[in-house]
Structure formats: C-alpha cells, structure tokens
Image (cartoon, rainbow, N blue to C red; front, top):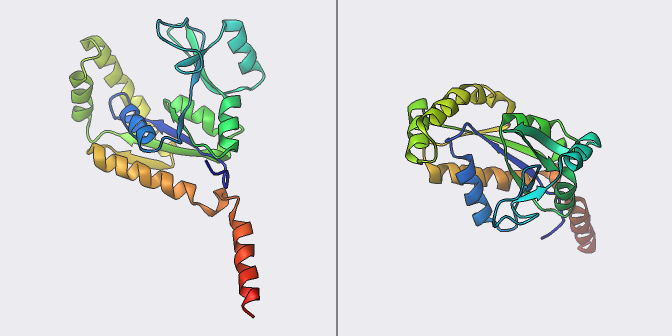
Length: 214
C-alpha cells in the first residue's frame, strides 16, 4: 500500500445492537488493506484462537508493564480480565499508510483520542433509529438472555449520551445507506490535504512542468 500519507485510526463506537460490529466487518470486507486492531488480553486463549490473530495473550504482569510504560492506546477491565490496544503494532501500521479499525466503547474511544496518536484519529458514533428498534435488534440476534438484554438496554442510555464527543454521527436506520456514509467518511479523510505527505512534491512537479512550457 502507498505510504503517501499516514494511516488513520478509525474509531467506531455505539451502544450494543446499533450496528458498529456489522459495519466494521463490512468495511474490512470492502477494503482488504484495512487492518482490524488486535487487542491484548490477560484471559487464557480459547480453543482455535491464535496469538496475534484474535488477541495478543499476556500475563497480568506483562499487561501491566505495557500500561505502565504508556504502551496501550486504551485499556479496561472486563469480567476480571484486562483488555487493551497495544500502541506499537498500530503505530507501525499507521506509519506505513495502513488504516486501523477500532470497534470500542466510548471509554476506549476517549482514551484513544487522548493518546499520543490523537492526530491520526477519525471518530464515528453509530446511533440506532429508535430505542424500540435497538431493543428489537438485541432480542432478534438471540445471543443474550432476557436479563442481559435488559442490562444492555440500561447501559445504552449512558453510551448514547457521549455522542457529542465524536466527529461523525451515523443514524443506522438502513444498513446499506449507513455503510455508504461510512465509506464516504473514510474516502474524505484519506484525501484531506493535511494527511497527504506527497502533495507538496506533486505540486512542485506541476510547477516545474509549467516552467518547461515557457
């Protein structure tokens, strides 16, 4: 992939059921050059999971050492295990012009926006068309018991309250239309003047061609 620009950190956040994981997957299928951010975790690997594909598996001490030296873009405790996004592989990708997709909650998004790589961030929040539709989607996917659905619905109110912290908002009332909007955001961000490292040299080349016409 061309390194005419630095890559982007594409943050996708939403309440559970609004569609961020589906849209992330569609984006990665649309552009294979995109890379999904692989998290580090202190939980044990499950059967079939491969180091560096699903997760970077760390001991609690190893994980904490990365946190202590500022090597995590974001991290959190979930059900007794630590999860986080190591900065080193993301920085390597971005420096080679590769865009990295993050499927994170608002807290993870906030940490990444306040990190050393803040200038590379594009933040996008996915909103449901209505609370009734959000609940319908959670029930329809059949992954959670009723009490878990109720918990996710209760949590969604707080998550939605952080919508103003994001640069872009997509109301996911139609999946294909939302995906089209998401692609448009990515294309626009990739072509911003301030993100392009090659434009100065290209304009100089054009100027020299003008001189050659004299």
